[in-house]
Image 1 (cartoon, rainbow, N blue to C red):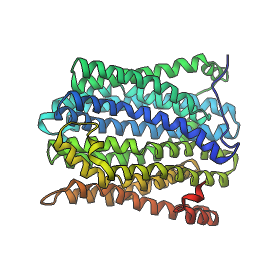
Image 2: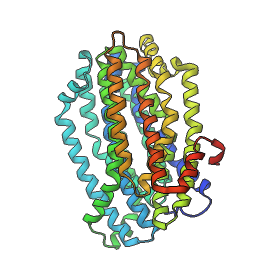
Image 3: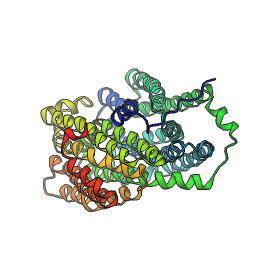
Image 4: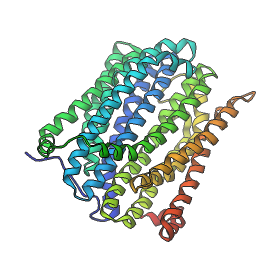
Length: 460
C-alpha cells in the first residue's frame, strides 16, 4: 500500500516550489471559509436581520476558536517540517503521536469552556436583545463541533509538514459540498434559520475529520508510524507548542480585537451589528490568498531551516509578499469600485447594505497592508523567531486597533467609515515593526530584502 505523499520543499526553483505548495493551501482555505460564508449567505436570504446578527456574532466567536486551533496546529507543521527536512524519521513519528494527543485534549477543554460560558459570551458581545436567544442556540450547536475542527486541522498540519498540501484540499472540498447541501436543506427548505446553519456546519466538520482519518488509514500512514513505535514525547509537545502558541496567540489577539470591535459596534444597534458581520466575512475571503501564501511560507521556511538554507527561504518570503499583493490590491480596488454590491451578496436589507458598504471601503485597505505582515510573520515563525509576531500583535492590538475603535464609536455621530480605518492603522504599525526586526536579525541580506519590498518586479 502506498504511503501518504511526502515532499521536500527545499528542492527545485523557489518560485515554482512556493506556488505549487501554496495553491492547494489557497483552495483549501477558500473552501474552509465557505463554511461560515454559506451560513451567512443562506440566513441572509432565507431569514431576517436577527438571524444575520446571530450568525455574524456567533461566527466571530467560532472564527476565534478556529484561528486558535489553526495557529496551534501550525506549530505541529513547523515541528514536523524541521524534523522531516533534516530527515529524522523516528522523531517525525514521535511528533505525530504527540500532536494528536495534545490537540485532542485542547479541543475537549475549549468545547467545555465554550458551552459553560454561553450566557457570559452573549453579554460580553453586547448582542442586541432580540438576537440573544438565537445567538446562544447557534453557538451551542457550533461548540459541539470544536473537536472535529481541531482534529481536522491537526491532521492537515501533519500532512503539510510532510510537504503534502493537496490532500487537505481534497478532503475539505468534499466537506464543503456537504455543508452547502445541508445548508440548503436546513435553512433554505426547512427554514430553521441560524440553528439550522449551525447543524449544517457541524455535520460538515464531522465529515472532514472522518474523511481525513479514513484517508490516512487507506494510504498506510497509520500503520507506517505505528510500526515505528512512536510514543508521546514531552519535548516534542513543548517544541510544537513553542512554535504554535505565538502563532495562535497572535491569531487569537487579532480575533479578540475583532470581537471587541464587534461588541462595540453591536452597541450601535441591530443594523450596525449585521453590517460588521457581513463585512468581516468579505474581508476574511479577501485575505485568503495572503493567508495561504503565508501559511505555505511557514512550512517552506521550517524545512529550509532544518536543511540550513535560510537564504533561499528569504527569497521565498519576497515572492510570497509579491503574490499576496496581487490579490490584496485587487480586493481593495474592487471594494472601492462597488462596495454595496459586495455587501448585498449576504443580505437584502438596504440599511445593512448602506452601512456595511461604508465600513468595507475603509477597512479594505487592510487587505494590502497585511500582505507584508502575514508573510513576514510566517517567515519569522518558521525560521525560529515565533515570539516577535506575538509581541507586535500585542502592541498594535492594544495600542492602536482597540483604542482607535473605541474612541470612534464614542463620538456623537459614530461613522462606520471612520471605524474601518482602525484595522489598517494597526497593521501598518505591525509592518514597520516586522521590517525593523527582520533587519536586526538577518543583517545585510535583509537590508536588501527590505529595500526590495515596495518593488513588485523584484519578487519575481
